[in-house]
Length: 318
Image 1: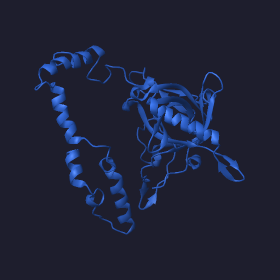
Image 2 (image 1 turned 120 degrees about the vertical axis):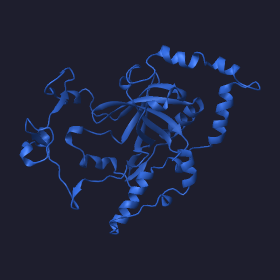
Image 3 (image 1 turned 135 degrees about the vertical axis):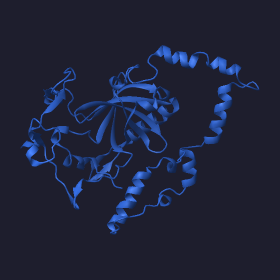
């Protein structure tokens, strides 16, 4: 499935979303003297999921932004509508959580005041270098980008400078050797964001978005382990690492015996792409194809989607 080119995305975005992240950036690294400035091109390493539109009797429905009558919770008929609101006049409202009961109270917020704080910028500014082990999987926020070298136009041909190629390789092999990644700041859709840049064998440099630190829940909010003390008591209490060593056999601690069996049973050299395919997406494509052929009650075949079905069912326990 083809993804929408980044430069075409503006055709589909409401004005209120602001300017997306530029696709051609400058990776900027402070050296204490002259900074390293490497021109890079970014592109998502994954395609978008298949999208479906809402429709009625085979035709797509149109959506309006409306203001409902005061006594209406859900708009179901034209009589429920007070007026149609032009998208350019839509305000940003914040639901005031301090209002305990009664009618919800909304506070108008002028987001335009934030645009000058984080203006569009072509710099991917490196803030620090950390060990790759410092990055935990739960810190990533979905989007992943390939960073390739961006050339300049010379006689209608894009040419990558030799000095840029040299610096790319120095950074790539140096970071690989040190098992390091760079934490960088950039601006996307008027928001300040942060990414981890690290070398990979498949894509060269990849930048993965990071969840902002202030979005992580504090311990005790919706979690079983409500404090560091409880976690410490769980892993270092009556069944601590030292205690589990005593419960082992043949000189091996209990945790080593048990997990060795699990690891050997499930160990693979790499993640098999077939194991983590989106089978819903594949079935959706199959359904679309059959619907195009006029099949009004299609039968979907999971065997056509996943060849290693039996192995996957055993792994996924389905």
